[in-house]
Length: 339
Image (tube, rainbow, N blue to C red):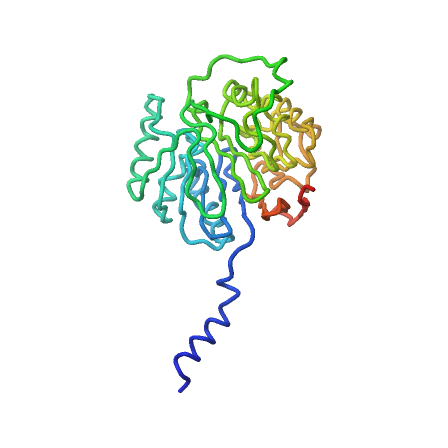
């Protein structure tokens, strides 16, 4: 009979690769057909799921999120981050929470909309979050994740009180800014964040709308420059003014659009003309945009309207370098660290 110590040592040796620490921040952009479900897994193995897609469709979106979790090698969600109370962002949560353990539910506070549909959505959220803890963040608050810095830059209609990430400079683009009608909906109250991992920067503002984004960018740009930008509001032209997008100067933009939602030609034009942009990746081919207003086919996860639900994956390293992979065709591009 082998000594216990020898046996344990052998087990530890054979399992060492499985237990080795991650060295990348991995981000999965799940196809939820024009909603949002973005899964982030830190080098420490902690998970953050931003939104949960739609309800219905025979449980489609929770299943797709679980498939992303399987790819990521995680069994539960440490933090569920709800950007705002709209069906395409939180509608799939209750069904997901019935299948997956979610430890902490992060939000901007209670739903400000009062329609019957909004009340049903709020009730479903209450049932789901009763299974874990609740954490309500204000603009400027940080999420307690290990190894990465996640700061709320917008929450419940309020914005970060001071510049971060080297921001704060006057924005010359603001001279041509044109505010739009005030948005009274949950969109303008989106809980958005800036994530920092070493020299890598990623921004997700949910469905924050035009005027709030102008406030972040004008007269001084508060957020500095970033590496990867998830288009606000799925690439719809009620968000994403040039004043903020161009000031952010992302190297890569990810558009979580649907076949017939988002990917609007004016929004695509703003992104493509952003200084320093290297690539645009899309979750879907935008039907209304046609060939001229979509990116290269290799960089679109779903080309058909009735698709298989392919996603995109990004892996970032601490030096600021990162890769993006199209999970439909395994097309991969690497972006070297900035010098």
